[in-house]
Image 1: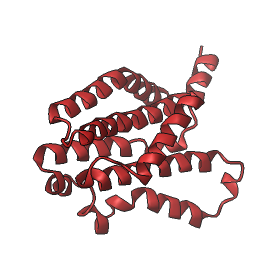
Image 2: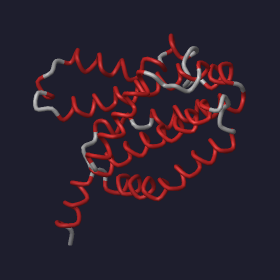
Image 3: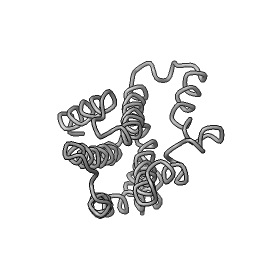
Image 4: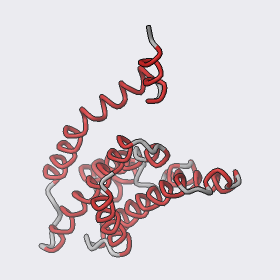
Length: 191
């Protein structure tokens, strides 16, 4: 993992969590999303710490609950993960966009538990997507406006297009071979 790049990204996300500066209507969304991404980063460090295996099950359960708390039945109707809630908060176009963005950010959860370099890169790609969208809102806020929805769609499209090949190769490789160690074993032990 490019540690300097990652360090800069997480530091900026910490700043956003503390003070989103995108306008009152969007502050809560960006603060919540930034806090979620920081929780994932904390989870990555937690999983790779030497004491990880010694922690009681209750600690793991607590962390798991925190990662999924906004999509639990009792919270879902007031979560930006619920497209209906997001649309009610931001209108049809922006609400759908924000719900989609949160879906993509939440897709980083498995990467917090996978030490492979490919997973680390995929995690950082989602951080960068969030930062790019935040930057669009922050710049627009300075001009007392919001970014046009087509500009946000273009950001998401470029992200998906740029990541598509990596995502496809990674997922096909894992589905064909299971985990990389198994793939190496198959190749080295095969006839």
